[in-house]
Image 1: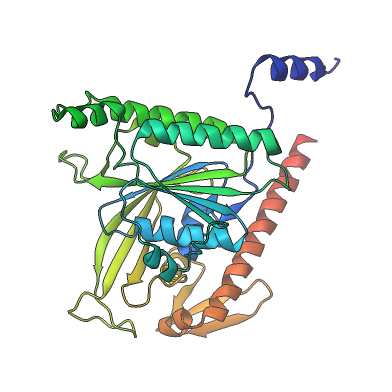
Image 2: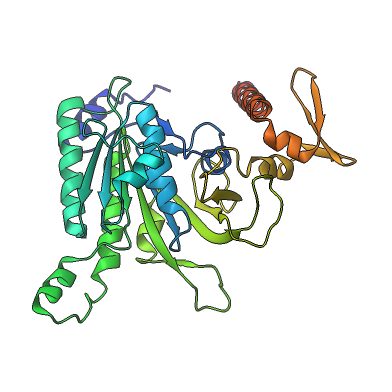
Length: 357
């Protein structure tokens, strides 16, 4: 039997249907969240995090750490890789001094801050950005620059109807237009960004559920855009009551951000990690890591100590606090786990090839 010749079909469909792309669009550039545990839960790798070419939503109540992660950590880590960042502030709440304290470079050649409140304006802005990018670079290759767009937040954006009613002084509500516009916006962005080195990360708000059979917090703006987004992380705010040594105290010293991965195509959904963010020193990139290693049985307990066995046969046996305080050892363990995962993946691919034969 002859093989089907795709050459004519490729030419006809790509020319006849504007904006159509053929083939897979695997992420080429990843940006760390500033926390190894959260990276792992989202991407399946301690050293990846959020991919460009996708739409990511991080939602939580006020003060849960979503702006800290998105407008602070992600932009800082993106800038370290030479990625240009665009920060769209819909709340007029992001202070330059606060961003600088988180390590963000606010100079004009590294960061463009845009104040915007209307969903229509965001759609026009992103449409123009994507159009200009394609005109200059085409589809993303290895030489195409990376761009990270952070929208903080989607929940505070308004529809054109809201604005018109405000100007008339007669606020009756927009009759459900906002959720539909948000869903349409995200659907279009997911399709448009797939083969480009442009990523969009948006924060959003949550509210308490009124359903006794489904007590999980709900994300504002309707469910439509959540179905369209590539990655969805729900963040719950808890109180941190610990001193510098990790001992329990009565005073509140920060927050514990409990992150649940509601949606990800790169790792298992509904996995959680709890990250500590002390007010006086900020997030520890290793926060939550030991809990993941223990839960997934990478580290196991023997007596009152914990053991990790490296792939080369080396064994480490320490108390929990000794593990948590030795960052060099934790980095070595993470690298060892990554190598094992790559080896297992290669072995699986080889087995699949043999089965085909």
